Length: 219
Ligand code: DX5
Ligand code: ZN
Image 1 (cartoon, rainbow, N blue to C red):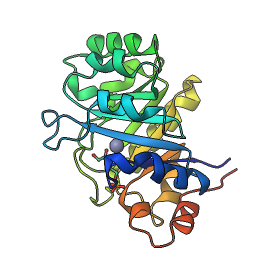
Image 2: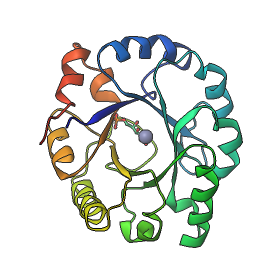
Image 3: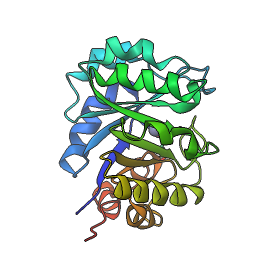
Image 4: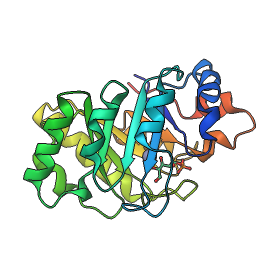
């Protein structure tokens, strides 16, 4: 089994996304990780879901949309035929029943992912694990690219992997933030199925080699 690689749009200019990902697809990338920030849930602001919808048909890979926004559910309508994974943060919801309702809403249209920020305990999402298609573990604080990987993510991935095995749940585990050739193997060994990368691949002189180092083969 080899993990999937999802490359973040953050290091690229919005207008160049279709061309950049044409190239990255040829190098073996599996998903386009669309980081969307609203300037409220996190300080930074990026392109909007409506802007992504406008260019989606030009992007040659499935869209792994990571919404770092305060009110994610209001974007389900606009992204419903666009997002492969529609992933939003558990921290946006007051309790697990609200979170559960949000997941059920998203699941009517696309695969639903729940994201857990760096300092959030995964206890907060245990109730929704039977429902979600994907769990995104942040290995940096959500909000910007180029930060250093935090090892606490490995423990969370291992726990989620163990729970998945014990209970026969089917969610994928994705890890996001500071991923590089040095920590990729530990993430995949712990149970990650999808590695997100922004700066490591974008800054690499030989992008093909960088992507290869993020593809880990395990039995
Ligand atoms: C951080 C974003 C990440 C990030 C990945 O808030 O969700 O997707 O941009 O970029 P690197 O790999 O540079 O941490
Ligand atoms: Zn992200």
